[in-house]
Amino acid sequence: MRVVMIGASGHVGTYLVPRLVAAGHEVVAVSRGRHAPYQAHSAWAKVEQRTIDRAAAEAAGTFGAQVRDLRPDAVIDMICFTLESARHLVEALRGTVQHFLHCGTIWVHGPSAVVPTTEAQPRAPFGDYGIQKAAIETYLLDAARRGQFPATVLHPGHIVGPGWAPLNPAGHFNPAVFTQLAAGAELVLPNLGLETVHHVHADDVAQAFERALDHWGAAVGESFHVVSPAALTLRGYAEAMAAWFAQPAQVSFLPWPAWRTTVTEAEANATWDHIAHSPNCSIAKAERLLQYRPRYSSLQAVYEAVQWLIADGQVRLPQR
Ligand SMILES: NC(=O)c1ccc[n+]([C@@H]2O[C@H](COP(=O)([O-])OP(=O)(O)OC[C@H]3O[C@@H](n4cnc5c(N)ncnc54)[C@H](OP(=O)(O)O)[C@@H]3O)[C@@H](O)[C@H]2O)c1
Image (cartoon, rainbow, N blue to C red):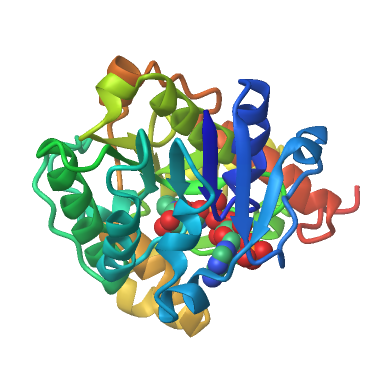
């Protein structure tokens, strides 16, 4: 198949593009050409690279036509964040593609209620990002189920891999938290540390997209969580990381209003966003219908990312 991937050089594209090439697909990689994949791979030499700025092309009203002119059999859209943007593309591609795969987010769910959360649970998103992604999901699945557009929606959790900082055990992105745990220093967590985060390795997200293409009949008109087999509590995550650094876990707790004053405003906002969702999602549907088999647990994915942070000098190990 000729597969056009919009936003192909990011976390997921780094793994998905080589997978698609290895599977024999003809791949067209769309981006602004500013960002190189996180890892080099010989597969990129076989990829047709197209430089398009989606924001500029959408403003000019030409983006959909430009994608259609690439003659895709399938389109993988990694960077759609508004309903308007989704509509524009769908209207241009309707009747021309065999499969359209949209990258959503588990934040289409608001706060977790009955866990693990399934795809069937009613959506109650909060925050503009989750609200827009939920609106896109509703729009795409409605069109697919009416037989008007062959869409599938994949919802990743927190994407992790070597090359960028993973969501840390305090629920934000400052790699200094790993340095603290490596030193055996105290880490203060909000509340009781029992709120959850749900990571996924970028290659497992790539696997899910590949399997969704392979299982067209099961995938069209459906959405799927794409996360690791199990979420982590902040406390469990902190303790596991301390153990990985061969240190005793020195974890203490403060109620949210006090805790938030111990970190920067940006860190507090990131942590709030994560603990207010406290995702814990089921992958049973993707396992059953797509044969999704994640290779990484949350901790295995994070270990790989932290090894990279250490090699990159962003996490320091104590001198022994
Ligand atoms: N990160 C997470 O933890 C997370 C969690 C859940 C869901 N998601 C979803 O994952 C998707 C993002 O995937 P990702 O993390 O693999 O992407 P990413 O690492 O953010 O990479 C974005 C890609 O899009 C390209 N790009 C950015 N702006 C562009 C524009 N205006 N026009 C054309 N290309 C553009 C970038 O290349 P250039 O810069 O060269 O253009 C790059 O190839 C989003 O839909 C997001 O909602 C992410």
